[in-house]
Length: 316
Image 1 (cartoon, helix red, strand yellow):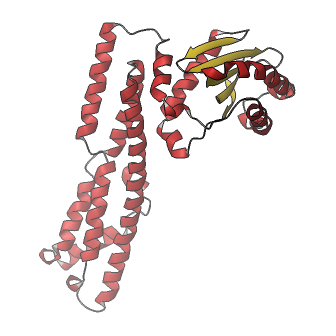
Image 2 (cartoon, rainbow, N blue to C red):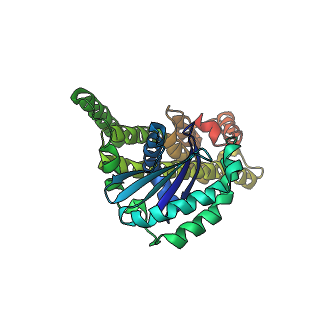
Image 3 (spheres, rainbow, N blue to C red):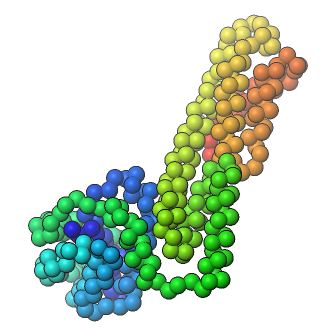
């Protein structure tokens, strides 16, 4: 099976077009984004190294085939199963013939890769007609691919290796002992990068998953912040309407307290400083309203009603 075809501009090494033949859902693609970036980076390095004739590089059960198309000034890179090399070698002349039909498109490329979407249909049709398609994905054995790629890279010195291990382990310790989600996300992304340098595929892939998880947690927390922010104001307005002509201390602010408390709890997860405590204290005062004067209680309610409707304002 062919997993991916990359097309690079020969004289710049810039990626012009890539077409994946793998079945990967969006969540999986996002979770393993660094894995795919590692593959792309590796392939780019091969192209930059220069190749004017067919190259074959084996990566475990996979093969990377590089072909230079001098007429259109493009290097074509194919990642496929090693067992399919013979079939792909027969396919390559047909791919070259197809791509040469778009000679002017390649030679006049201005950096806009969207122009090459027109290749999707004819390229897919040609590949699926000539090479067996068993609906596999590189994600079935990412460890093997990473090991094979990293085995080709220069080894770190023992001192450098130990320093990176210490740096990474410290970050992992911090991730496990803090609550701030943006910090966890940033540190997990660094752990992924360090694990790549250390050629540790297990930690690399584990923290790829953590990066995806923290991104989802951050998105979910912002959604809930927005929800509680809206509920704070709605419940306060309802309480004021229900007061009628009664004194403000007779207002029922329990729902406002609960929503404000929940808002402060969620804000604590995404705000690096302690601004969340401001809203926690306001919630406490709201539930303990009998200890406040009418003026103090009115000021708190006005402060809450004047809160920004944009959650991002609380995160900056």
